[in-house]
Image 1 (tube, helix red, strand yellow):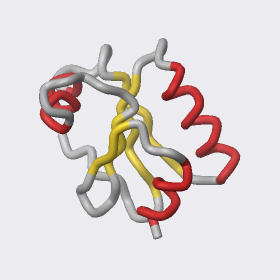
Image 2 (tube, one colour):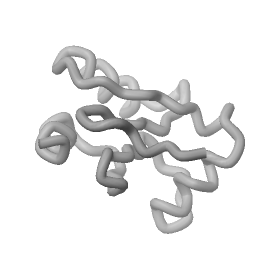
Image 3 (cartoon, one colour):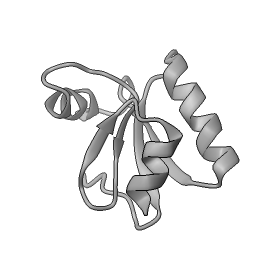
Length: 84
């Protein structure tokens, strides 16, 4: 499955227990940035995808941007800048 988001939005790989994920989701909502959240513990193959983006680690939040690039645990400022 293709997880690359549409322009102006992001895909966030997360877990339900991740405090950094919760914080970023709140920041994104307040900033009006759209995102699709994918729980790596529930969606088959996504934990492996996240690990491939993070040197073998299943670190969340991992973000995919419309240009196909990714970031691990980015700040709202970084997300905003990378979305342009």
